Image (cartoon, rainbow, N blue to C red; front, side, top):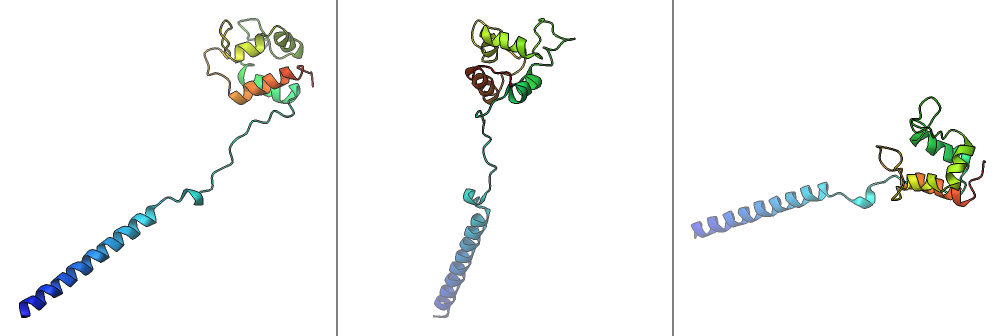
Length: 135
Protein backbone atom coordinates (compact mmCIF):
# COMPACT_ATOMS: atom_id res chain seq x y z
CA UNK A 1 0.00 0.00 0.00
CA UNK A 2 2.81 2.32 0.89
CA UNK A 3 4.48 1.69 -2.45
CA UNK A 4 1.25 2.46 -4.32
CA UNK A 5 0.89 5.76 -2.44
CA UNK A 6 4.52 6.58 -3.25
CA UNK A 7 3.95 5.78 -6.92
CA UNK A 8 0.83 7.97 -7.09
CA UNK A 9 2.67 10.77 -5.31
CA UNK A 10 5.51 10.52 -7.83
CA UNK A 11 3.01 10.60 -10.72
CA UNK A 12 1.45 13.72 -9.26
CA UNK A 13 4.88 15.30 -8.93
CA UNK A 14 5.77 14.24 -12.45
CA UNK A 15 2.48 15.61 -13.79
CA UNK A 16 2.93 18.87 -11.89
CA UNK A 17 6.45 19.29 -13.21
CA UNK A 18 5.27 18.50 -16.75
CA UNK A 19 2.39 21.00 -16.55
CA UNK A 20 4.70 23.68 -15.15
CA UNK A 21 7.22 23.04 -17.92
CA UNK A 22 4.48 23.39 -20.56
CA UNK A 23 3.23 26.61 -18.98
CA UNK A 24 6.76 28.03 -18.98
CA UNK A 25 7.26 27.03 -22.62
CA UNK A 26 3.96 28.62 -23.68
CA UNK A 27 4.78 31.81 -21.81
CA UNK A 28 8.23 31.92 -23.36
CA UNK A 29 6.91 31.50 -26.89
CA UNK A 30 4.10 33.97 -26.27
CA UNK A 31 6.54 36.60 -25.06
CA UNK A 32 8.56 36.25 -28.26
CA UNK A 33 5.54 36.51 -30.53
CA UNK A 34 5.81 39.50 -32.84
CA UNK A 35 2.50 41.30 -33.03
CA UNK A 36 2.62 43.12 -36.35
CA UNK A 37 -0.39 45.22 -35.41
CA UNK A 38 1.64 46.72 -32.56
CA UNK A 39 4.53 47.76 -34.81
CA UNK A 40 4.32 51.29 -36.15
CA UNK A 41 5.64 51.37 -39.69
CA UNK A 42 6.52 54.64 -41.42
CA UNK A 43 3.97 55.73 -44.03
CA UNK A 44 4.74 54.58 -47.57
CA UNK A 45 6.63 57.02 -49.71
CA UNK A 46 4.33 58.46 -52.31
CA UNK A 47 5.12 60.15 -55.56
CA UNK A 48 3.27 63.42 -55.83
CA UNK A 49 2.84 64.49 -59.43
CA UNK A 50 -0.01 66.95 -58.89
CA UNK A 51 1.98 70.19 -59.22
CA UNK A 52 5.08 69.57 -61.29
CA UNK A 53 7.20 72.64 -62.03
CA UNK A 54 10.23 72.73 -64.28
CA UNK A 55 12.19 75.01 -61.95
CA UNK A 56 11.68 72.75 -58.92
CA UNK A 57 10.78 69.10 -59.51
CA UNK A 58 12.13 68.63 -63.04
CA UNK A 59 15.38 70.50 -62.35
CA UNK A 60 15.84 68.45 -59.15
CA UNK A 61 15.54 65.20 -61.12
CA UNK A 62 17.98 66.50 -63.73
CA UNK A 63 20.44 67.79 -61.10
CA UNK A 64 20.40 64.54 -59.19
CA UNK A 65 20.67 62.21 -62.16
CA UNK A 66 21.89 64.03 -65.25
CA UNK A 67 23.96 67.13 -64.52
CA UNK A 68 27.06 65.14 -63.61
CA UNK A 69 27.49 64.27 -67.31
CA UNK A 70 25.37 66.91 -69.03
CA UNK A 71 26.73 70.26 -67.85
CA UNK A 72 28.98 72.77 -69.60
CA UNK A 73 32.58 71.88 -68.88
CA UNK A 74 31.82 68.16 -68.82
CA UNK A 75 29.52 66.75 -71.41
CA UNK A 76 31.23 64.14 -73.59
CA UNK A 77 28.06 63.84 -75.64
CA UNK A 78 27.77 67.60 -76.11
CA UNK A 79 24.25 67.50 -74.66
CA UNK A 80 23.76 70.06 -71.91
CA UNK A 81 20.68 69.79 -69.71
CA UNK A 82 21.13 72.92 -67.61
CA UNK A 83 19.06 75.12 -69.93
CA UNK A 84 15.27 74.99 -70.31
CA UNK A 85 15.37 75.53 -74.09
CA UNK A 86 17.69 72.56 -74.63
CA UNK A 87 15.57 70.34 -72.38
CA UNK A 88 12.40 71.52 -74.16
CA UNK A 89 13.98 70.65 -77.52
CA UNK A 90 14.69 67.14 -76.21
CA UNK A 91 11.04 66.92 -75.14
CA UNK A 92 9.84 68.07 -78.55
CA UNK A 93 11.84 65.37 -80.36
CA UNK A 94 10.71 62.71 -77.79
CA UNK A 95 14.28 61.98 -76.84
CA UNK A 96 14.15 62.92 -73.14
CA UNK A 97 11.33 60.61 -72.13
CA UNK A 98 12.59 57.72 -74.26
CA UNK A 99 16.15 57.78 -72.93
CA UNK A 100 15.03 57.84 -69.27
CA UNK A 101 12.40 55.13 -69.84
CA UNK A 102 15.02 52.99 -71.56
CA UNK A 103 12.88 52.64 -74.68
CA UNK A 104 14.46 50.23 -77.19
CA UNK A 105 16.32 52.12 -79.92
CA UNK A 106 17.36 54.94 -77.57
CA UNK A 107 20.44 55.28 -75.37
CA UNK A 108 19.79 54.28 -71.78
CA UNK A 109 20.22 57.22 -69.44
CA UNK A 110 21.78 57.73 -67.05
CA UNK A 111 24.60 55.92 -68.77
CA UNK A 112 26.16 53.02 -66.83
CA UNK A 113 23.86 53.77 -63.88
CA UNK A 114 20.58 52.28 -62.64
CA UNK A 115 17.40 53.39 -64.31
CA UNK A 116 15.68 56.43 -62.80
CA UNK A 117 13.09 55.64 -60.15
CA UNK A 118 9.49 55.24 -61.28
CA UNK A 119 8.69 58.44 -59.39
CA UNK A 120 11.37 60.46 -61.20
CA UNK A 121 10.17 59.16 -64.55
CA UNK A 122 6.57 59.99 -63.56
CA UNK A 123 7.63 63.55 -62.68
CA UNK A 124 9.24 64.06 -66.11
CA UNK A 125 6.35 62.33 -67.90
CA UNK A 126 3.73 64.47 -66.10
CA UNK A 127 5.62 67.65 -66.84
CA UNK A 128 5.78 66.69 -70.53
CA UNK A 129 2.07 65.79 -70.62
CA UNK A 130 1.32 69.21 -69.11
CA UNK A 131 3.06 70.84 -72.10
CA UNK A 132 6.58 71.06 -70.57
CA UNK A 133 6.03 74.62 -69.30
CA UNK A 134 8.91 76.82 -68.17
CA UNK A 135 7.54 77.36 -64.70
